[in-house]
Image 1: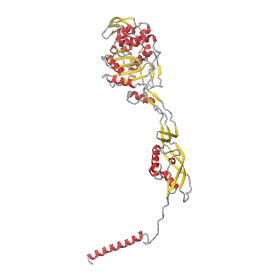
Image 2: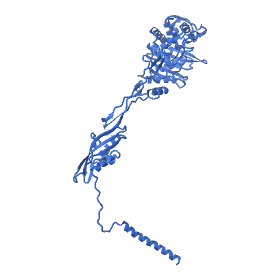
Image 3: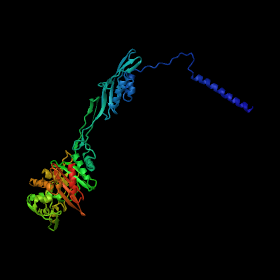
Image 4: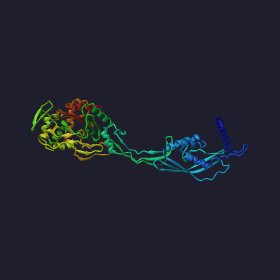
Length: 519
């Protein structure tokens, strides 16, 4: 057979096979004879129970689909969606009561159901509802009423779950929440660390919300937390911080309310490093003359008007003492205090018993010790001394040291006349560990007058225009040819200490005082 003839036979075979398959397909997929009259069964409408079950299944998972099962879908969808949002992550379940199929001609039906909400805190809200249905043509629909969600629900309202927050906070002196940045960061962390969680135990409530109205259905009241007021005064803290930030040298200010010993401000600038105003201890210089003056008055060595010598230089014991480029043959003791005469105070100090300075210092809060909630503190130290050491200690050199905090307490004691009880957190009073009685009233009034004279005509007379101000300047040798500057005082009921590191004199401290008090 020729090649061309074989190819034709193969093609013809393929066509024959295709024809056979086509016939088979017709036999398999044909629906019967063309003239068949058989009908498909008609789908029966859902029963009331099926519609109700579908509604509760979708009510708060797909409010739109559930709303379309009602005879008022727009209203239903709105209320269902509001309740879904209001109940947050609460889980909804509804168990339908068994019902008999409705009569063939029935147009209404009602199905009872038991509802359980499991709320985010695992508490349960249980109640019963009735689901009304109506038939239109062959279709059953939920007859919409908000009562299918809760029996007390009305149009425009929604079921809502919400937390009831416990009332508690860390507050500033102004009554506003204390936030980071309003006080030194280290102090803020110490206070918040000691205060702990102030919020108490949260409660909860579930109910019906309609606009601003809320009807509680169930709940648990919160257990109130603690409200703690930190005594820092935001305005004075800001003024103190601005005053020290304006100085190139390390500087600090501590302010105390004199009559309560509440701490009003604690500020330091970035240049003062490695310490803080509560614990940093430095030679107090002539600010210690407040203590020495009180000790001399108490010992009967002088009275405010007693004439005393104030030579420019004097050898006391083996120590050569100098004033700051001035000297007087004689002047009243109160004036010697105002102009800060080292030779006068060195001479008086040499005549005091060894414990006179430390005992009197402690009565002003210097060298005293408290456990204070919110801060670690160290007021300073005035050791017992004799001879040359006592001479130097009497005008704040030698081995006497004080913190700005300690010197602020000294000023507060002068102003109030009472033993200080320094407090940083109201309701948490300090625990006294080594505290003495207040100074005798017989020395306090003269001290107040002498400290006022320092401002009106003494070493701080540049501040004379600030009403009600009294204080004491100090320049303290710090070694290496440098000197710290101090001003310690009070204006009315605000006592304070201003310290400037390596300032050379008290001038920078006076400038910072003016900025602080006028700020």
